[in-house]
Length: 80
Image (cartoon, rainbow, N blue to C red; front, top):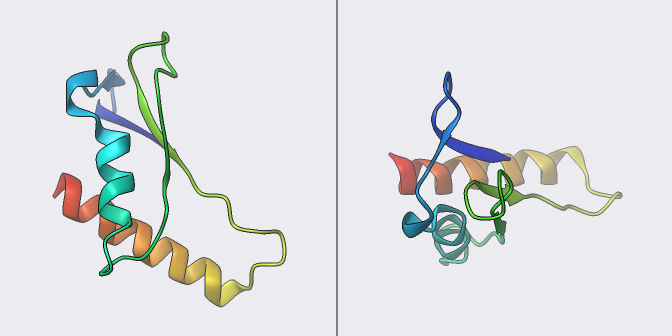
């Protein structure tokens, strides 16, 4: 899941903001209890933030719903 400041121009967040690492750290809080694998530099080796969700193949629909719910809560907490 890639994150940009502007959907039209696809302008990335500045690397100094460390968005993907912030999302990951926020997800690890007990209130969320989810690991969002952070990544950056996807645009040019320095710019761009993304997270990876990697549930196992045998995940149930209920578990997927829980993953989505927790991920949304984390994104809302970090980005408002």
